[in-house]
Amino acid sequence: ITDNPCAATGHRQLDWQPLPENYKGERLYEGNYYLTNDLELKAQMDIVDGNMVCLDTNGHDITLKSDVHTRLAIVRNGAVFNLTNSQFATKESTGSASCLRKTDKHENGNGGILIGSGGNMSLYKGVTIAAIADHKIGYGLVAVNGSLNIYGGKIIGTTLDDDGRSSDGYGGAVYVGPNGYFFINDGTIQAGDNNKKGGAIYTAGGETHIQG
Image (cartoon, rainbow, N blue to C red; front, side, top):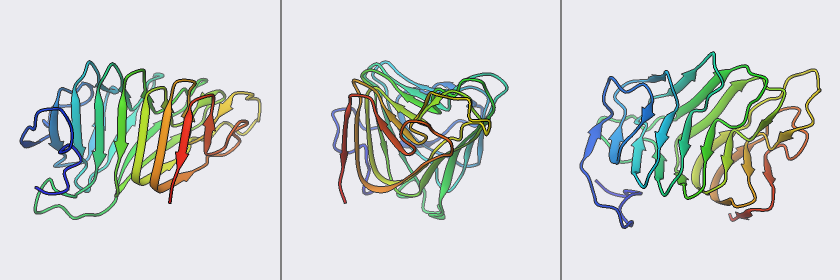
């Protein structure tokens, strides 16, 4: 295993293992996981309370189809979430792009992934985070009140509804809250439609650093 994004951390190193087939959301405990099939979530992924999770999508897609207002994932309380695709999990991995996708329609969007206080998320090459959604009110597909670092991959912003009634479309792709930190060195941030305040990135007092 080389180029492990978890290698240079203070957390203990764990062997890579397949994500359990019965995992459909909720708490995901510390470990280095890779997908063996496409994953359809029934609930959001919770990476919390100091746990460090490295997830290699391994050429597969993760989709959340929900009839209730929920998120793809929440990262907070000292937790770390590293998301990559087909770099080192299995010799058989294809290296093809994969996608985390949220499909829903709600009055309030409020983020596909929430990086809460004390949470840290890093996105690496080969992964797209996207939404097929229609919200009247919403924040970015990734809402950052902790830290988000992007070293590759793509975030495609959510779309507000076509009637234009929203006055609160804060950053279709990334919303950086007052205490948030956002760094991008590679990758793509693509705006959604009809967002009133910052189509791709909206910074509400936090730090945003763009390189490359």
